Length: 185
Image 1 (cartoon, rainbow, N blue to C red):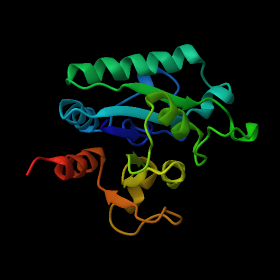
Image 2 (tube, rainbow, N blue to C red):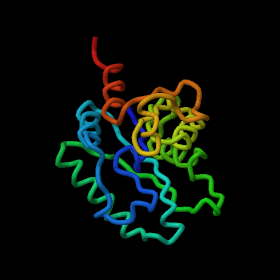
Image 3 (cartoon, rainbow, N blue to C red):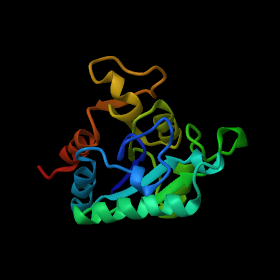
């Protein structure tokens, strides 16, 4: 199974320090939906692993989160793409759960649900915690220089990245990298 695990906020859609709380606030990053559609067309399964502590903080409810995801799915379908599943941590940092990134709980749930080992599965996110969670589950870490990592577009990189992390300008560049490795000779 060809599987890719993506972060959501700052990777697929615009992030906000005030949290993305409603469908009207959910805006895809330029080229992100087209990039996911390219994965879909190439036979990849795309899964999201996302911290959504706004739920635990009472900033929005599950109905609002579902509406955001319905908007994402609809916009993505219009591009010919698909996300196979969305896994999210609803807890606030104070709840000390095992599913909140940088812990690997969401990734372990994904591996169990899909019945696949995650060793070498590409994962992309815009923060160190996204990649630490993926790397702890055996995934191959990729940092996209959007969202929280946009300040590094002109050089440098955040501290604490897992060993072997590759950097990409955005989700489209990450997808290009993944597809170029798996292209037939």
